[in-house]
Length: 412
Image (tube, rainbow, N blue to C red; front, side):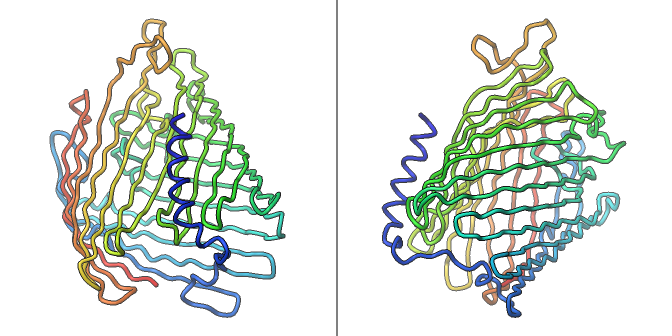
């Protein structure tokens, strides 16, 4: 009911605001958005200098915060090539991460991805591959910058049954691999997190307007751990979702559904309940832009005795355009990390009926503000202040962190 209510409201809004485009909107050629064109080849180079400033707690430490000057430089190149009914696309990027005092935190990160799409009218198959090699933090829980690689392989298709309906099918394999010998809080994170995730999903799409798609997908997911087979799990998920493309008044996607998460270890509690994934954007009077991100799902923890947690969070970014070139923005976000621990008395704690939730709960919050100036349409500089805090039932997992940093982005 929650899924249908949320998606139903957005469907009504999107239909009401996009129906006028139904007769005129057409699928845009992906090459049209590329600023540099050479015949059937399109290129989009960008350069971003971010985190240029002071971080007063670079290790998220509860008792001995360390300050340092940091900077990240990221050149990126996106390319697309069309050959008849085949579209090839890919991105390569390098992140140069600098710390002045703590030089062992410096790194060179790499990311690359490629995709092939074939448009045969009613039959539209695709395949993709991606690689990420980085030392950036994995998520809001893991504070250490540990070397890791993440790989993804996927293939699928869309089958158009009619102008209003279609079927989608997708198979995907994702790997997470931390370097051996990396510890955090005394835990070897390669042992607790290195894993392979395989997913098969399929569903029905309803094309309400050229800008609005309503879908219902079901999926089966398996998580298998290299060195901790007791963490292995199977997941069944069903996710109604709505996707809204520009120039709809609300843009983005929202999925609200159900997940049944079953862990192989009988001492670890399962989870059955609703999950959320959403990213929405709306602009008021062409001057105020609101970006909203919502999430609720199960995440694996690096902790050995608390194998996973239920994370529920949101992030809101409001950007106000003060003139042709000047803008200000504010950011607020909060995540709740509800941990599930292994049973010590033979009766697991957990989320199921009749089970008491007596595990620890952490909260991670962020509050920030910034100002930006655009020298030209493709060149912007900004200055931001950000305060982050995590509270926890465990004092050693708490921290406060303040960053003051500038940014410079160049891109078309």
